[in-house]
Image: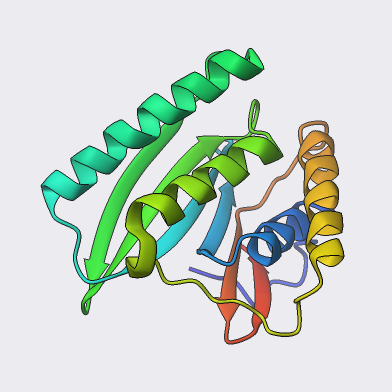
Length: 174
């Protein structure tokens, strides 16, 4: 659980900014977390309705093939990606876990586009009307790429969770 009262923990600002940037750049990502124990970044997408086992299996195959081709083209090896789905109250949450060692901004964009293309209108996206400027989004993508390369060189001790809260992005340190 979150330990809001422990003031001894100092958040890692670079890691917090990375999670916030992911949520700003990709409006289909509803939550993002980083677990330093296994070095995995988790992206959560929300879908309207439940996801059947066949739909999940087909999406898993679609993701695996697409990511494998991307990794071959970019000469990335030994990447770890895990998918699972949870459902609650007529909404499904598709969770993608990816190791941070070889993750790139291009792959984040690919995973986001694959989810959008596969699920279409079922995917819940939260666009912020205040961020209509394409130059701002492009700058955030550049910042995101910079943060991904920096994050590999620093130690992150605490688990971080970033979520959308109405039109804001909030990152918790626990």
